[in-house]
Image (cartoon, rainbow, N blue to C red; front, side, top):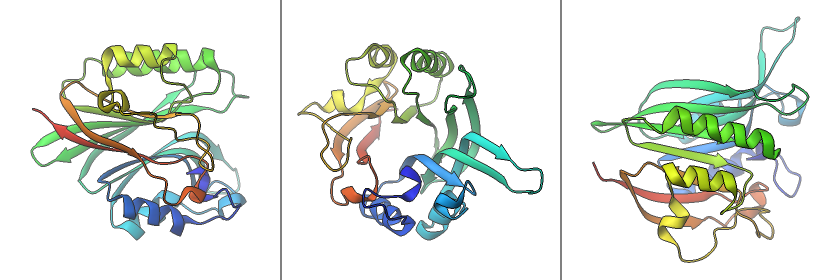
Length: 234
């Protein structure tokens, strides 16, 4: 969500909230979310604001964390999650494989109580650096591939469909776009999309009903939202 700043340069959490509300999604993964981070987003706890506005449950995992000696507030930037269903656990996994001069990444892990079924959801935003992205994908696969519960993994992967890391993920999980087929699902840049950088992967016990790229309010962020309708087959 580019800390709420749209392609028109305007900072608007209301616009982000409207996109989410109109999508009618039950589970929402967000990247590039500020939590008291800096002046660029007025030091707002953005995920708390969105959760309150949308009346949803929330989780947050910082990739970057800054602590000031003269302030008790922790300044963070990273991944977030919104849910219409109860969140029973959240955990943030740092993907710290590179020097600190490179933007740090993380994997947000959420346990969602979906009626009588426990669902594991992961939200991530991988590195632009191919070497680091490879390590990050390996970490994700090793952590999740033997998970006994249904799994959804989503976010900005900074990779193209068919790339080496995509193939690794697809060996263990289903890319919802590939499952449905029917053309390209370009999400970047939002003004004239020509690349797919955003993906939703699911475990084999989840069936993909439909997938779409939401284009209605393309000015809200530099990426377009990717939406999937899923069916648990257990």
